[in-house]
Structures are given as C-alpha cells and as structure tokens.
Amino acid sequence: MANYAENRKARFNYEILEKYEAGIELLGTEVKSVRGGQMSLDGAFVVVRGGEVFLINASIPPFQLANAPKDYDPLQNRKLLLTKKEITELAGNEKNKKLTIVPLSVYNKGRKIKINIASVKGKKKFDKRESIKERETDRTIRREYKDLPAGRHGR
Image (cartoon, rainbow, N blue to C red):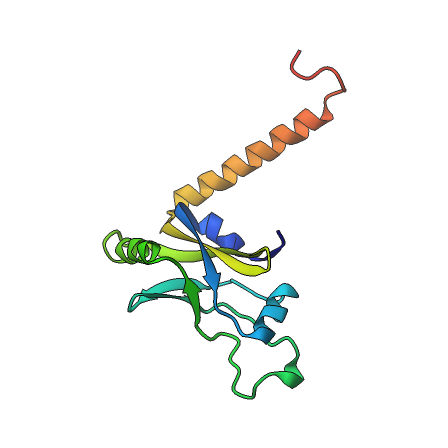
C-alpha cells in the first residue's frame, strides 16, 4: 500500500473525530500523476452537495503537460465515492455539529486509488501548544532511552 499524498497540517490543526475511506473519481492522466507522487492536499477540503461528496482545492497537475487537454484545471472539483449511509452521516456532521471534513491521505488499495477523509473539529491555540509539548517530551524520552547502555533499560 503506497502512500501518494498526505495532509500533514490536518493532524496538527484539527482534532480528528471520525475517519472514512472513499474512492476518488479521476481521469487517466490524473491517475498517472497521482501514482507519480505529484498530488498535493494542502488547503484541500471536502463538501457534501446534493447527495454527493466533492474534494475541493486538491491539486493534481497533468502527467505530461504536452498531452494534457487545453482546458485542464489542476484544482478542479473531484467526486468522492462513498455509500449513501456515509454521505448522510457526513452531511449531518457538516450541518448540525458544525464540523469540517478534510482529506488526510491518498493511497492505493490493490489497483484502486483511495482517499482517507475525516470529520474534524478545529483545535484552539492552547491545544496546538499542548500537541507540540507532547511531541517534544516524547522525542526527548526516546532520545534518552536510546542513549542508555544495552541491557540496562529500567533497572
């Protein structure tokens, strides 16, 4: 399972509440571009409109610029493929609970390209500081644990 694109800022800026796996509707040249690692999820988000789910603002440049259609837009909206039950859950979360839906990562599952999306709630500034502090303490603990001589861990 290769990971083609990841939204690193999403895990820092948002508290992830519920994850979903969706298919993504792509053109043939877009598939080649994604598999080449050229996709970017920076600033991308997901909306539910008219019983359908769309990925907005995700950039997929053409695989070969010379062979791309003249009217090709790298930031065009792309349809996500989910079950009706998942779509109604997402629509309810978006409207009633005031949650945002963001893409987390794009990867392959067999021959299919899948996208991992999540219902998220925005973190406050103090939550972000707490995340940074937690990460730093974990890093120092791992560093200290690594520096101990062999066979003397915790004794």
